[in-house]
Each structure stands twice: as C-alpha cells, then as structure tokens.
Amino acid sequence: MGPLAGCVGVILAGCSSTRQASNLPPNAPRATPPTRTAEPSRTQSQRNDLALFAMSLLDTRYTWGGRGPATGFDCSGLVSHVYREAVGIPVKGTSAELGRQSRPIDRSQLQPGDLVFFNTLGTRHSHVGVYVGNNKFVHASNPRTGVRMDALSNRYYAQRFEGAQTLLD
Image (tube, rainbow, N blue to C red; front, side, top):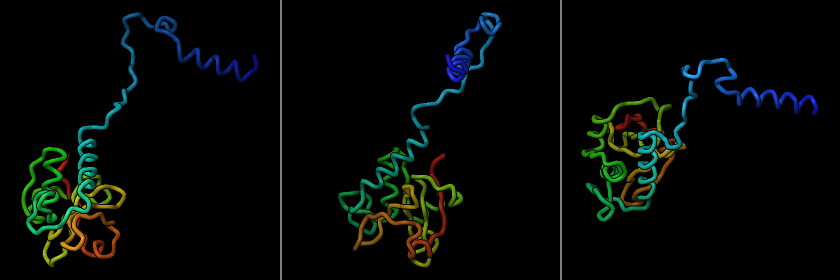
C-alpha cells in the first residue's frame, strides 16, 4: 500500500470510530452535527411563491382599480391579488397605503416578494411592484403594456425609485 492510500485509510478510520474506541462511556452525550433542512424556511418558500405567482400574471391587462385577472389590475390591485392568492395574506389599499402597511428595508436587502415603490405621479408611493429577484420587478404598468416585468435599473424606474419595503418576516 502506497503512502497516499495509507493516509486515506487513517483518515477514514478516524471518521468511522465508535464511542467505545474513543474511550467515552456508553451513555456520554455526543455532539450532533447541525442538521440541514432540505426545504427552505417558510418565509423563503413564501417569497418564492410570491415571485412565481407574480410572474404568472405577466401580460394581464391593466385596468385602473382592477383587482383580478378577469378584469385586469392596477399596481396595488396586482400586489393585493398576488399576496392573497400566493400566500394567503390579505393586503388591501392603494400603493400609498401599502407603503404605510409595509416595513422599509435597505435596497441591498431586497428579496423576492418584497415591494418596490416609485414616485410616478409626483406623489410619494404612487406606484408599487413585486420584486422577483435578479434586479427585476413585476408591476401593472399602464393600459398600453399591462402587467410586465422591468429592471430596477431601467432608466425611467431608476429615476423614480423611492424605496424597498416588505410585508414578510
């Protein structure tokens, strides 16, 4: 047996030693390694559901005051529908009211499912979208384009960005 094979054998033997071989009493407590969960946390699962559900509504028509896919959406109606249908969280109100209901977060902490707010009408929080990750958000833009995905770096939205907020955690 070569020197490398001998080292591997010693390492493997050390990994497979039993309680008795380590001179510990049979009833001595053993440190157990932390377990990794196969499923993401509930909040992370909710975030993924929110992002996927929002993206499933792309190309739905825009309707001022609209609250559902059959009638169309405005920006706050889209957010309310996504939260209710994807994760069962009832959210109502205008984009400004959603801004008051949610908790501000640093832009660097944005995660899927968080809300992004813009000043598109000369008033605070006049537009809202659902952040879906990778610097993108889904929103009910206007009657011409309907529900669409845009990048936060899009010149129009970057100039009007007001902040990131969350309804989760």
